[in-house]
Image 1 (spheres, rainbow, N blue to C red):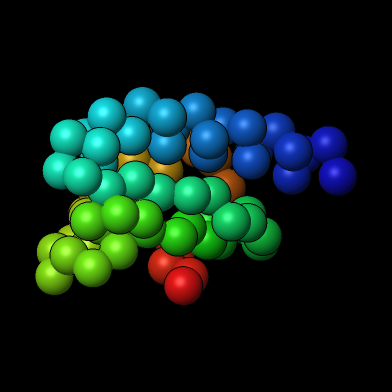
Image 2: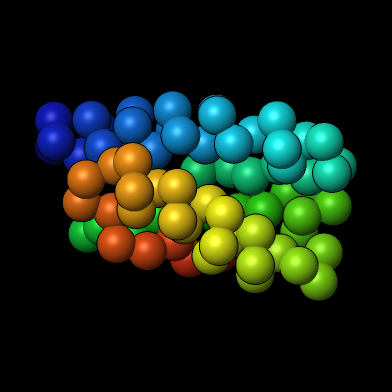
Length: 79
């Protein structure tokens, strides 16, 4: 349980660093869950309906999380 909380905290820290870029484009993201190395995110605002949201999620957010948080394998979008 402690380890999951630590991973969740680290994921949130990385998301907080990325948030200004999302906000600049009228969007945001919400951390829904972290389980077995998979981060589940909800894209909000303009990001939720943007055609580039998959690129933002995979090339931007996922790449940063995999690089900066040990144990993270991928990011999935939830609705």
